[in-house]
Length: 320
Ligand SMILES: [Zn+2]
Image (tube, rainbow, N blue to C red; front, side):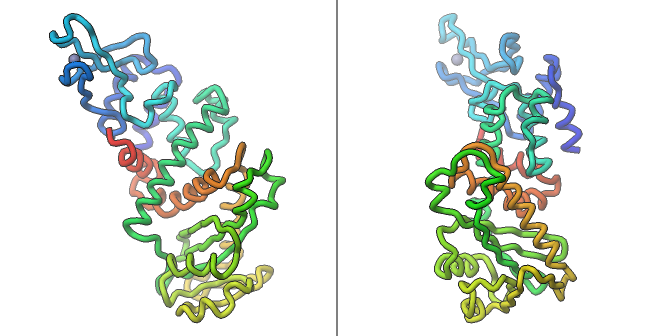
């Protein structure tokens, strides 16, 4: 339902009528302001046709106290789209693609003329990732981000992202060089995956174990490789700790999950981050990790899927 409505607006050259419908729809979804006050007199403004503007409309006030002068404001005031010059229908296409998968290929989007330049697309992706990052932070603050139950076990993984340079481009920044480990905890419950991905300076006991304690419920079964940082530490914290050699496959007793499926999940996340273009700073990596978390913890859980969730999270961040 949401998808079909959205695709109705994903048109390259919308008519004025379509533009009006899109603005009304975005207002209903609380992505655009429904009421805007005049900065000159404080009265509510009215929406008027504006042929010269890409949106086709703008807010207007011609109150008599202005003595003949008009005031106009953009329909985008206070919204996610405020600083962008791109049409709202292009934004809709972009948001739709963004929620369709973590892998968005810029080349496809340029071909479909969502935006003309790679720079613009990167900027848009950055805005969307930031929405997801902030949503994850709120979720963590309110509900924690806990893994583990009688049916959910946790798998630990530490990856050095710095050495995977063949997947990346450009020079690694200094922040990148310093913080090179991504520590991952993956909650596995039947077909559900709950990843927690953190940037750590070192993969020592003092860096890793507190993250486990913060996110994994006591008593949970934890599977890790034979990395010495975990040795003895996890069992003494009340976890059922098993180590496996990564070259061996194992079968989970609860779910029947094979470790190669879990390895594949890790690989998907990793390739995702390795594919990063441009300047891979620590901040950018963090937001990418957040986006992976967002997809599994929030996006997939929403009754209307990632698209429904992203609309909710945009509303929250840009109170219009
Ligand atoms: Zn006014």
